[in-house]
Structures are given as C-alpha cells and as structure tokens.
Image (cartoon, helix red, strand yellow):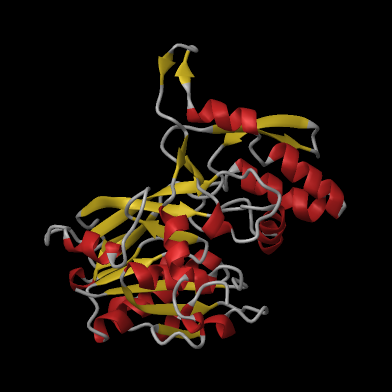
Length: 335
C-alpha cells in the first residue's frame, strides 16, 4: 500500500516544509504540491525533498475526461475551484505512479490518527485497516484554539484544539454597526478533509469530499482527525483576510459565507484600523482567553450535568515534530 498527498499552496513558507516532512514521517510516499501564485519562495523551501513533486496550478482544460470536475464548478476565479482542479489532476498522476490512496489537505492542516502519539508510518497502518469496500475516509476537524498573539513554531508548540461537533459559539464585535454577534466558535471549516482509494475512480466534489463519476457518494468511514491551524496568530489572521479581501459574500454555489469570515474580511480591509488597533481587535474579539478556555474544557449543562468538552488536548503533532528535529539536518523541520 502507498499513499500520495495533494495540496494547493500560496505563500505557505511558514508551514509547507514542516507539513510535508510530518506527513512523509507518517507514511506519505509522494506529495503533489501545486503552487497557486506564491511570492514568498514557498516552492524553494521544499525543492530538495525527493518525495515532493511541485508544479504550478493547472487549468481545467488540461484535465483528462476522467479527472474533470463539474462544469458548474469551473469558475477558476475561486481558490476552491483551483484546488479541485489541481486535485483532479493529482488523481491521474497518483494512479500513474501506482499509489493506493490520495489525501487532499491544505498546508495549515495535519492528519492525526492518534491524539496522544503517532509512530512513524502510522497513517499508512491506519489506512491499511480500512475495509476494502470503503472508498473514502474522512478526517474530522479539530481547530487550533486562538489563544496567542504570536508563535515561534505553531505546529510544534500548540496542543489545544476546538471540536467542530459541539456547537461551539464565540462573541465577536462588528465595528461598523457597533454591535456584538455570537458566531460559530470554529472559525474555519467544519467538514474536515478526505483521503480516497484510487481504485475507486472518484473525483472532487468540493475541497472536502469526493464523489463517483456517476455523481453518487462513495462508501466512507471516519479515520482520525484533521488538525487545522486556522488564524492561529495575529499575523496569520491579517494575512488570511487580506487574501480574502475580494471574496464575495456568497460561495460559488450560492450559500452565504459565514458571518465571522465576512465580518473579519471587512475589519481587516475596510475598517481603516491601524495595525495596533487590529491587534487589539484580534486579542479582544477573536482570541479565546483563559477563563473561556477553562469553561470550554469542562462544560456543564445548567452548571450541573457534564457535557462533552469543546476543547481537547492533542500532543501527537508536537511529539512527531520533536522526532523530526532529531533527523539529519538536510531533512529536519525548521531548516
């Protein structure tokens, strides 16, 4: 059994090398990386890694018939559409390279098969236990708890993550209307990501899921978690929403973008706040303080009945990066 990984990246110099070495340690044999217009030297940071195949984003017209996405999704102005096109292209490459599975994720996401610790090759062994009739596995998201202004090495340091399945809410502020709003406390996506069995001949439906060529859904099962480092620091928050500046209020298929993403897009790009004011806003209205975190870790219904915690501790990634640092210098993270 062999595993391929696909991701589309833009200006991911902070995460890309660490991400790819992490997944290679867990069992990824080949990583297909599509550069979507980076200007920070992202590609150069991984050019020496022999298992990485890097190229520019491809056009929908370059896809083979079996790789094509739905024509309704072919507006290449959307980042998510370009991701789907690249993933469709990678499906063909992975089959040609004799791979068994393809995992589709982003540079700020890590597959995690055990919350406490993970041995080398752990992802491969986990996929090896999946019944042959299962065509796709789903990694459910755990999003980083935004509790620090800055990090030295986020993926190797942070261990607190928010669960996406408990209806977590957070209070934020709209400076344009001077009103507060209760928004979803998991700020990024809640669908997770997928790995697909290449023999099943699936194709991308969204950046989160795949479907069969006839449009039907594949057989699937859950397998571990996806650690999502979304807006993990003030700098990452500003960078994310500056890139999001021209994104419309509705997604390609018409449903509305989440309130916090629309609001923070405008706060970063249209509020006229100085950097210091934006920093204060991030700390007050985006970050989780110690009291809120303590409450989310030990939730109670009506103050009495225990409820599932909304925040969990995950040490596996930190331990994996500690192992990677012990490798030869030419393959070490943080190079």
